Figure (cartoon, rainbow, N blue to C red):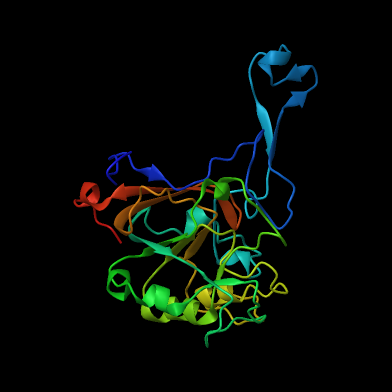
Length: 271
C-alpha cells in the first residue's frame, strides 16, 4: 500500500498468530500450539498418511495474540452472558486512530495504583484530550503507540519488556468525556503489567468498584481489544471499524478488527 491510501477491502489490525513460529506473548503464558488431531487410528495430518489435515489448538486468548474482552473479564459471570459476540451491538462503528508517544520516567501529577515507577511508560490524559472533538463523533478509539516496529508482532512481554499503560486520569477522562464503547490498543493490557492483580483501568473503563466483582450499571456493551498492530501506512484519523470476533462463550476471544475508509461506509448506519 502506498500514499497512505486504503483498499476498499480494509486493513486487518490483528496480529497473525503463527502456531509454529514467532508469536507475541504476555505474562509468561504458554505459547499457543496446534497439533494434528489423533483419534484411534486416525491422524489429522496428510504428511503422516492422514486423509486430511485437522489440528487441535491450545491457546490463552488473553495472552497469545489479538483478542477482544468484555466486562466478564473482571466480574463474576456465572451465567456467561458477556461473551464478545453477545455484547457487541453493532459490527460496524465509526472509529478514530490515534498515535501516541508514551511518556518515559513520568514526573507529572497524573497517577496509577500501584505507583508509577521510573521504568514505566504511560499514556496521559492530554494525549487523548488533544483530539477531543474527534472523539465526540466516534464509538471506537484505536491507539497506536510509538515506536511502532514489527517486533510488536512477536514481542515477549515480561519483566524485561514491560508495555506502556494509561494513567487513571487518562482512563477516567475517556469514560467521562466521550462515548467510546470499544477501546483498541497495541499493548497486551490497558493496565500496568505488574499491578498486584488490581486491573484498575479495566475497572474504570467498565465502571466497576475497585474491589467489586459484580455488574454495576449498564456497561456490558463496552469492549477492550488488546495486542493489535496498526501498520504505519494507516494515518491518524476517522475510519469505519468492523470488529470481528469469534463466537466463543468466553470473556475474551480471538479478534480480527478491520479498518475501512469511512467514505466506503458513508451509506451505512454507523453507531
